Image 1 (cartoon, one colour):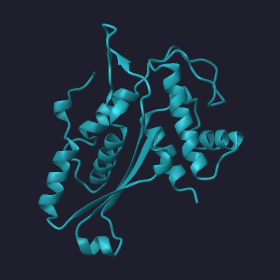
Image 2 (cartoon, rainbow, N blue to C red):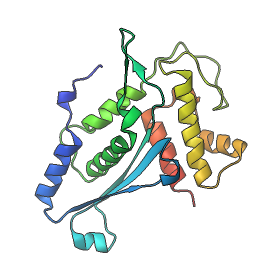
Image 3 (cartoon, rainbow, N blue to C red):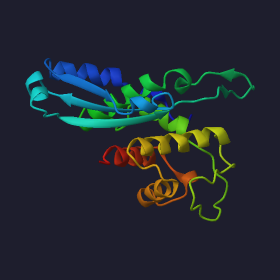
Image 4 (cartoon, one colour):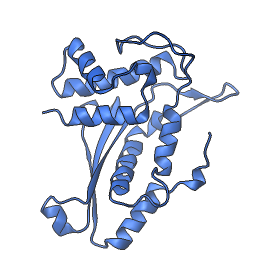
Length: 206
């Protein structure tokens, strides 16, 4: 890991500071995709300065977070299997990350933009790529030269497609077009921010 987690604030710490400033504050979290939560979890968090603001629908800020369930156990450098956080707690992880993003947008990011949970997520999402290859134009082409397993990448694709399907975009070609219209680069080069952007756009679909 190329960073020290102690340098980053936890979401729990942000929440404490929020309630110190707004004793009557509210943090409301909603699961967006209950029909596909066994594969992935998408949460939407809203923070309010008071119960009155909540009743009038006036949040200080909002935030999304998206986590995909790990279907395989990970292996350490000694070849021993272990359960990643998203193997058993992908919903809790997504919920807490959504709260962290909302509080960050509300100005509770301290001296660091990212929360500790977001830094941990970025580390989980990190992949190791070989030198550039010809541009991929189809998200169904699975790169094999990554630190993630092929099954893991397929799982992420299926989760994105499931979320699109829940919004009525069921045609395979339409899903492909939607993905690459928003993120104009090969799937193998997607970053965590790209995933968040894609999910946010899907949520906004009517």
